[in-house]
Length: 266
Ligand SMILES: Nc1ncnc2c1ncn2[C@@H]1O[C@H](COP(=O)(O)OP(=O)(O)O)[C@@H](O)[C@H]1O
Ligand SMILES: [Mg+2]
Image (tube, rainbow, N blue to C red; front, top):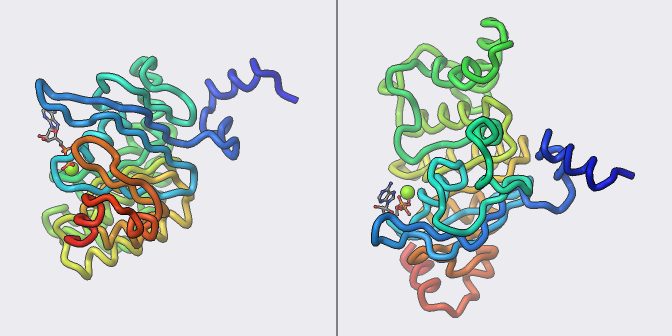
């Protein structure tokens, strides 16, 4: 049996391996507070996501959903509270350690899903060029093709982002998010601004990718239908706090007025 020391050393070297199947959530956010100047944005948020699970974070615009993702990625620091990735508090990490953890997170930002000046192929290859320096050009080209095939975009390698539709841009963004085989996937409004058919296609794709890659995923959305389709659990935010968390059916049973109002209007 491994000693505590061995477990800790292993966790320091390969946190996602050490905590796999151990009951430690992939993402655990506890009592997170964040203000910008005098504006309180997050006011004590706690959520946890396990490997293989998708949490949808819902709420009106301006409730701090994107800020929550930025904190989890480590692009902003919380005022108080903790963020544990595979059991490891990201607060005490230096930049190198943070980069190492970030490499195992795939993210799709709300705006600017892609780099405008790069082709589809270059966009998806970008993380590989920067983080997989040992890969040869031909290996990288093969990997990019394989990633684009996963999202049904293998026929658009040489196109610029401006030449493809919003839904296609999100697909390519998803392929790029998967490039480094992440164990955590953070998607910010993947269906925002898309027509219902394209939204449905993105929902189906997120479900397919989740089934294949077993990531711990957080999908931020204000689209209740999308949340219901892709997530195992939903967390509804209001005024910087989680009002309710559970399955869609559990949310429906909630007697909190805000929850009923949100479900009714969506
Ligand atoms: N870097 C920042 N500086 C100042 N205010 C910010 C910053 N980032 C977000 N905010 C503010 O925090 C609030 C929540 O933003 P956001 O997380 O983007 O909301 P949403 O739930 O729509 O994603 C907004 O009022 C926004 O203006
Ligand atoms: Mg947002």
